[in-house]
Amino acid sequence: MPAELESGIRSEQPLKWGAVAAVAYILAMFITGKLGWQHLGLVLLAWACVAPVPAARRFVRSWWPMILFWLSYDVMRIFSSNLFSRVSVEAPYRWESAIFPAPDGSIWPFFFARWTAAHSADLWFRPLEIYCNLIYLSQMFAIPAG
Image (cartoon, rainbow, N blue to C red; front, side, top):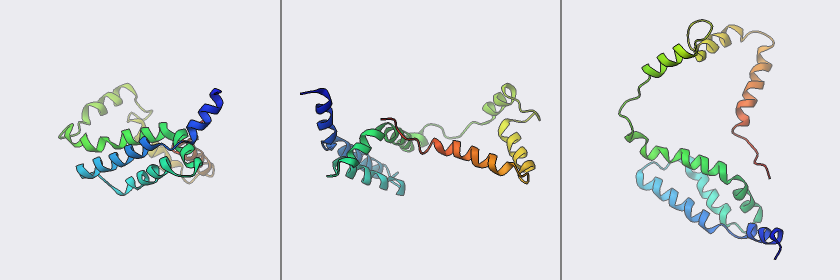
């Protein structure tokens, strides 16, 4: 059987293991008490894995890297409270201040916050803000190749 035809058949098959993994993840979050409203998307993901509509399964196959990244980031809520009893910010702040000083001697986030406040009334500021927000949002709405 040609590879193109075989891969086409494989892409049409249900992703049963994906659905089982999504349900297992929901159960793990429930057992640890970390299940939240944001996990409703996992129900949709489990459905998309076994949906009778091939387009839903193609979506999961195309977006699996983003889905895996979200799940790996989300699973940190299970163990993050056990890492440190406090957050140390003084040393990193001093390192950042020494290595990357802003023009006014502070750190860059403070410098840009003051710069934004000083220039927010300028006519050209709004298009610049929209442009920067679109670049930032492009990270959320990336479209997978292929």
